[in-house]
Image (cartoon, rainbow, N blue to C red; front, side, top):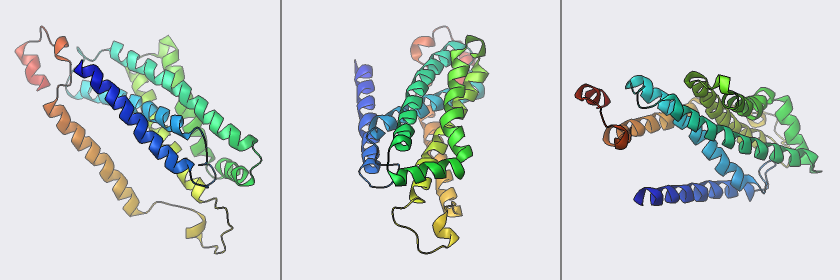
Length: 238
């Protein structure tokens, strides 16, 4: 009962958190952000990246701790199917978001679309085509459903979502409503500084440390699946 309650609480908190983040974008007048589907779009994107990250962590723990007997292909396929289903929803929301911007008559949105295809074309293609289609193909075709292929598809999905977040923020801020009077390069285009790279790396490092500490105090494998494990295997798990 407590387990089910925690699941419902986590789902509710995730929806609330990512909906608020979407509203922060949606209530602005920036081109590309004033979208009515940003709420469910961000929630689906969070589930999409979370499913991919879980597959990556499963692969890492399986290889590092020798848990091949407990984390099997069945677990990867089940998580892969979830990733495939969520990727389909995520691709649909992405298509709807850009279709309405392109089809609408708002000039500033048309300028944003032109910038995406002209200056951010490889990022746009990777984030919204490769990062969505490849996981669906890998998991949708039974012959491709290997642990290695599913893990590669998960890595592509997570990286693609990070790139998608970049092209949501940066091209929009480079497409202001008012013309830029100053033509300095620092004002016309964005490139991350070493401080921003350091903060990003620090955030990833903190997540890895916290997850590693949590894995030391919380069971990685369900205790119901540990029956019949000998002392040598228990030492490996510890």
